[in-house]
Image 1 (cartoon, helix red, strand yellow):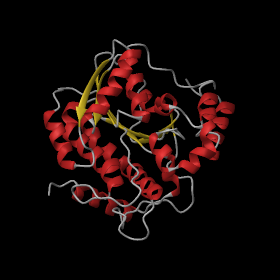
Image 2: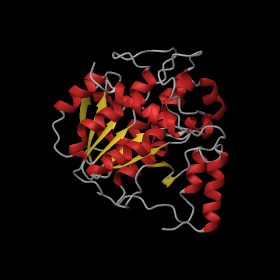
Image 3: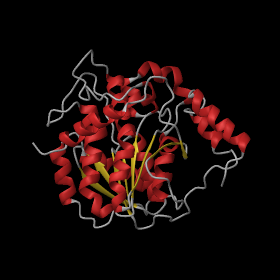
Image 4: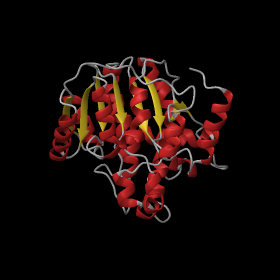
Length: 318
């Protein structure tokens, strides 16, 4: 349904001001506007296999619950199996018919991602929601020597998708990004954050900017297998990462933060809607959004090429 001009103007205003659009109030207002994209039909993805990384906390739980209610067979990709099983049991108490499977994978470890892809006993995958996130308090490296935010948010999602691409034909890949990326340029010359003073929130936002800048290239690459690729940001959600790493921000905004269901809404919609989606777009609250709002953040063609070269090199087995 096309959004009428007044509603579109309000929607754009909310998006550009951030404070209104990223909160739970912005979500509640948007879904009341004429032209809000329709919810997926009941049973829209019944029996289809969907992978959700970071499925044992925060937005991951919101994704799992909503997908299960739509009939999906949900594979909860987690590092801690015990924690994952506890979350699974809690979800089953609320949704007894949910078809949930625990899959162990340490997304910081590219070798474990390769092991996971080999052992995954699923022949067809409808969608992967790359939701897992980290924000270490100090610069930390993965087993392969990559800065942890980049390893978890960029390298492992790309590698997992590459390894599953034949099973994802006609499927969808969703990268969960962050509105924090708007404040960052593409760190093409220093993707591993080796220069300057390390700051957790900056490292997080830089990795999310990398996701979004690589998105058109990845979408084009995976479109050969008829895979639709999207990135989205959930707005300001009350996730464990915010609670642990941004306590001052949470204290200031707590009453306006989105819950897991609201933050996960667009990820689930992108995975489940029957609407044909444009490929390689960045989404928020079920609509494509611009990837730049702040002057000076646009990357040059040379920077994008440099970042792409780093990504390809980093994924080569040691």
